[in-house]
Length: 313
Length: 261
Image (cartoon, rainbow over all chains, first blue to last red; front, side):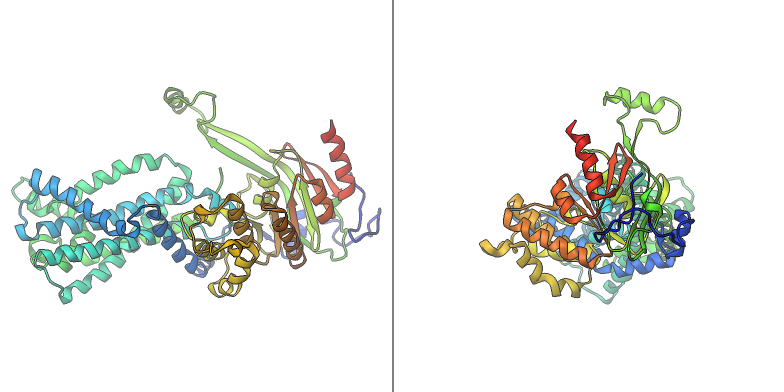
């Protein structure tokens, strides 16, 4: 169609015959070691790439966190005030109006409730952020190269940092109700780490689902609210079911759901009178670890499987 | 076709596109009506991919680029130029066909990673990290980036949130961040040539520098002069099809004839 030209000035209408002439494009690519653009890397290579982007993941999560309240007059104070107001609303409705306190000693109800709200919010907002992690950042996905899992992981990390602000509020509330720091508080660290892994796994799963079906962002708030009411955020599952005519294992199964497990662990770690015998299900740590591993591994592999497809319109 | 034979001194291919097709899928744009009832009837109607309209943006494009080439992409609006660039960069998945590349082609652009609510300073770091630079590389180039953007010429603006910048200032900072990294295969979308005359000159010089360092440069532009200045080969896309591929002058002559109509 067009005559051949050497691009440094001279015209060579008939190009010299070359060994590459007979090759198809695919063979040419192989000969010169070209790799396919946009192909999915292997799982271990993917983990390696992701590790290489750890600074980006952290910086992105912190940037999102800072940007959140940067237009407000009170600025970063809202990081602490927002969870506090949340806790106040739940206390007003469930503690005072509905009397969900049943079976829980009065002096620990507020710490119990606030812990539940904060810990559940951590999972809830990680899932919600996960749904939008890819679909809400298509511009980024279509402009730059990075392992896409960076986004959901970064959003989960943002929620973890948000939770740490809430923990400040929580400690103040604990002190206000006469619950003082003890060695058992250290158990909060492994519990939150396991929950973070669990949340990240969920965020990865929902990031892939949400990239295909953005409508999930509309649906998920209802699913999450149902999950919240079923997990005993504002009431104790065993105490609520105690006088109901249900077999004991129903209570166990309800309590083994991951949201309930992580809430119970944090309450158990921080509140003295929230005892293992009375309130916690059996094998609580094993379940905490199991849920984290299950969600983490399944979520990561599931997300990676579609790595090359993210960004399609 | 020009691409099947060896034309250049190096003879080393850097990008090979093989019968590449790109299709966008747009949700809920099947009919003109966007009402709830029409959405519902779309869902209820049986058949594949209900309510999804397909846009076939690139149709069977093939070419081979070689080391040291600067290739211009021309064509009217919506002809698939930017889409083709993104596909080469591996950012848009191909519907059919394949793209082979030497190293990782990158798009010169970082806009999407920046956040208006953050200070210019933090955006430099965030943008650099998003492009895959290490913290040390960013630290080493930080001052260059800020100086190049000229943001601080009128006072200490780099410590203010980006939303307080004028559109020109923000564009300058974005370009400065994007141009701070070296690339194997570099792709430039014209939209980047922004800012006042002084800054445009500075950015053209920087693009020439980047060209020297990169193996192959792709440039999308509607400005035939800048294509003539920088490119030795031109791909002309029209309606997603490769209409012509050859030396700059030949293709531009045809293209100018076509657009003059």
